[in-house]
Structures are given as C-alpha cells and as structure tokens.
Image 1 (cartoon, one colour):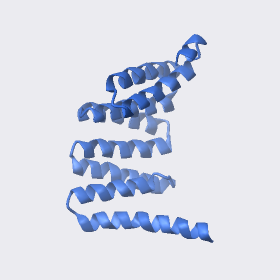
Image 2 (tube, rainbow, N blue to C red; image 1 turned 180 degrees about the horizontal axis):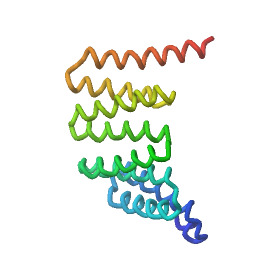
Image 3 (tube, one colour; image 1 turned 60 degrees about the vertical axis):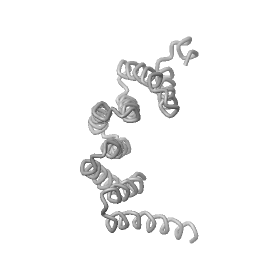
Length: 172
C-alpha cells in the first residue's frame, strides 16, 4: 500500500486497499478491513471506477455480515447490486444476487434468501455464467434448512449432472 502512496498511483492504491480489506475481513479484523475498504471506496469513487465500487461495496457488506449486522450488510450489498445492474456487469450481478441470498441466509430469513438465489440461478442460466453451480448449491442448502429435503436433493442432483457432463466431455 505504502509504495502506491509514495508514487501517488491511485488505481494501484485503491486496488491494494480493496485486497487488504478482503484479507483483514477473512482474518476477522473487521475494523481494519472496514477502514481499508472505505479508503478504497473513496478512491474508486473519485476515479469513477463503477466496477470496482461494486466490488468494494460487496466486501463492506460481507464485513458487516460477519459481524452480525445484517441490516448494514444488506444495505451495502444492495448498493453494489444497483451499480452492477447499471453498468451491466453480468458476472458481478450474479455474484451480488448470490451475496444478497447469503446475507438473508445468515440472518435466517430463508424465504428472502431463496428469492435471491433463484434470481441468481435464472440470471446465470440466461447469461451462461459459471455462477450457476454455486446458485444451485445455495438453493439446495436453503431448501435443506427449510426442511424441504426432496427439493434440496433436486438442486444438488443438478450440480452432479452438470459436473458429470463436464467429466464426460473431458474424457471424450
């Protein structure tokens, strides 16, 4: 980080701060993570980098989720989703929809989680995105938590079928 400050290269500084925020979040150092992410956000906003703003807002949301502050988490992830929709960042939109589902799942609001996972699945299918399998996995997990085991199994079997098709294609 300091080298980018020394040479006054803001795009590099913002990217480094974003990564630092993500690392500190994984280390459960939420105060440091939030500080780094907010600095990155300020720089990305000044630079007008909408894609990066969407990314940082998601990291801030995850930070709040990990602290159990689901209202703040959802607020930041919704902001990220809105930006990603505005700039048509298709992988980012799918990821944000999954992230919203994760927020609601963590808050034990399973019906809302299902809605976002289903949106992500439909969007991933429509755009042919790799996040499709993760959407299926999260739907299976949510239905399991709802006690709807047959439905959960259907989603998990879809993942197995998709993976076996990939395996067959690789062996051809």
